[in-house]
Length: 358
Length: 274
Image 1 (cartoon, each protein chain N blue to C red):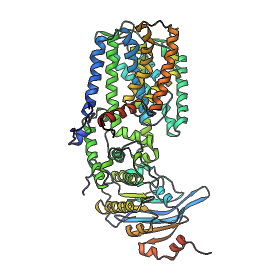
Image 2 (tube, rainbow over the protein chains, first blue to last red):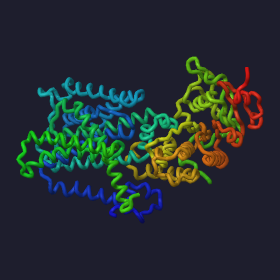
Image 3 (cartoon, chains in turn red, yellow):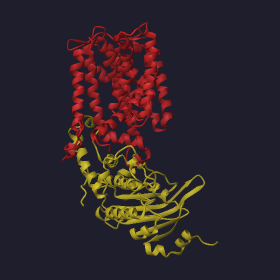
Image 4 (cartoon, chains in turn blue, purple):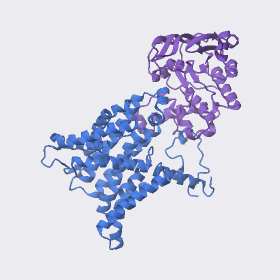
């Protein structure tokens, strides 16, 4: 009943190409944005910012980057963690070489470094497909993490081998480093992630998005409608790695505060890939749903017993946590193999039809 | 029905060839795969505005011929002259830019995309706005999108597939998929349209519909068509001239009536005692 679309007619192509052809979708998003921009910052405490909101946003952004490559353009990649690392190290070097540079500019520029690296490691995609391409990107993963360890210039030759985020001010407010407040960091991440999400939606629903999807669905036919496969694939690698690089820079500068090479190793790649798959490949919304399931839910579950006053030991909570999350992932994949985004699409369809079955 | 000329004039818009002039010529093309000779020294031409059929028994080299024309295969010998330009090797996406579009024997659509998106994808080449404008969406990119949408909607009207506009093509029945594929090829505004068995696997009614669409495309839009088809009734009714291949060699070329009574053609189809 809430989702009744009767009476919403489109009288022009302009109206038909709107971001939300259905009014209720726009209202729902407005409500979520209200929560994110007003309600959460007013109610959340330091722990909620640091353990829930900021990581969910950053992981969702990384998954969005991967999704553009894998879900939209159909090129499987296992190097996401390393590309995040490229963004983080690039941002670190930019900030240490040009301390006066605005942090937003530094983060935006660091994306270009990971985009360049992504394109370089995307070159094999012109010859190989599917799992074989995944193995080729795996080479990027191992090589780059090795490079982060061995190339001392990257971490300014400090003895620990890790990068440490200094205090960085923007317009008189500390946004990164040990002195930054959680609310400021949250707003910073939220703005960057919202903006990139909007731009990604625009790219994926227009000409370039259609080109990527054509390559994903059938590359031979794509070539026969005049699409240059090389350009299409490499542009997907570039845009995807750019977003992943930004996510990596945010990951270190606005959340972790410090990082060592092992952080960007393959578990991070897998984590982002799981978020994209469980959220739904080829969907923008899915990245957020996936990130909430994989990143936020464990934190909520482990905080539950103490919040309810249950006498459960922390080790037991950890085990239960792993079991519950694992079971949920399997359950969701059985209910809807195409991910949470499709799950929501079906629910929405039913709501529009309600109370009729078809 | 009058189709708008695309907002950005492409080099397909006006090729300076008078109707009836030679649009494409195949000159002494030979193609082999290792020891297998698929095509041996074939020459024929396609005149502007006609429907040209390529027929022949299974394995005669018809599809290979189309693949040579649109750049999928590079012939070992011979050249293709298209709109006065001679070439041997080229990439398929260059052929599209020159104005050659094609459909496939086994449907080659983008299964995960809707009918509308599939046909819009056919216009990718004609669209110009790059990443920057695409990111902003509002402004030039949207204006371009809407201009092309208008053309695509006319193609959708023309092919009578309005009701499946939003349906992912993977869910459509075969006959409709064939129609969507024709729509995607038309969206490219080709000057030469190659159809590889447009009526394969269709029932009588669908065949009649498809024949009507092919004739309409040819007459109303002036598109030159080269088609491969096994249904002889359809071929003889539709086409202006027919070229017959057998074992990679050309055995006949001419108007349908002439070809029909050619002894070599009859032998090729019915077999002959040696």
